[in-house]
Length: 481
Image (tube, rainbow, N blue to C red):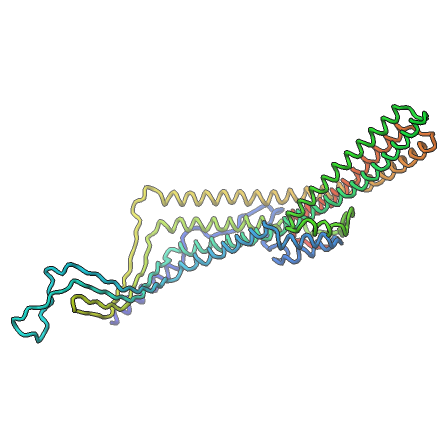
């Protein structure tokens, strides 16, 4: 007994010692350049409510309402949440491989043969010379058992699998945050486009009404013989051109509304009613600042976090592939109760069996070795993708800053040019009304105003979209100064 106890203790210690190690390389975050140093917090400390709070600093309640709706209803966010649930279930499934599995079984089996040649044994106490009764060939076996099976994770393959699943779960959570950031940025971008479109639409409507009135007055003068037919044709053509531009602009605005309907999953009548509150008014964001560009900014990007977690999972996959090349040891056991009856003879009792089993790979024509090489290659691929995302993050941040600076410098000049052209247009209109001006000069002034208005609105929109692009480029993780 003492010898058996020593053997069991030694075997347990050996298994524990082997199980404390896992084959394959351990993950270490790859070195990067100083300007792309990686720290891995989730955006807004993992609090999605702060995404909406950031947009509240734009002082536009309609915008924050649209973003809030998109956060709740957008299908991309819902898909990202579903992927988290899948990854979490996969992690639980792989974790279960580290523990024994128990299965309860119950059966009641009956069978019957032809009974030929089957006789009962001589029952004790039966008178000599009496023939035993012939069996009717019926058998019945009733069984109740509890099965246990446990594959020992001696080389750590199961732990590597669970490690990979955990890292991919973290990656899917980062993807969910990335979907939130991207949807918020896209809604804001389309909202700015709509407001800019509405401003241009208002300007085109005013311009069209002015041209139509000029055409009406000019045609009256022509009919009275005070204006040349060519001038009347000029102003009529100008009015038609302006009206066509107005119709096209209205269609552009409607298209943006349709896009917002899709992004926010809001019915169009409700959306249009909400949009009327701030019609043709661009939001005015407050000043923002980032502590450091781009290192701190990149650390907030959930897509980079996702790529880095996928990289860690790929490293764990290498260990999983290596573990498949080692022997597998499993323990199985059954304990139960069985009752047997046949031809009037019954037997019953407890049953059990227990024992280890080992599976040793001997020859597979290089399949397992190839799987290890493939896992290493996938890691190299993921490493390249991770480095590519960090470099792209730097570029996107710097591009956004350049565009923001450029728009800020051009906005004052664009507005000054618009004011100047509008003054010139008013003077030209006044001259025409008193008969001292030229219709050609008036049309040139109108075209200049339309072009200048498009430029001014375009610069304002570019400045706002640069802020939005910067928000997305840093993963939505920065706060106001």
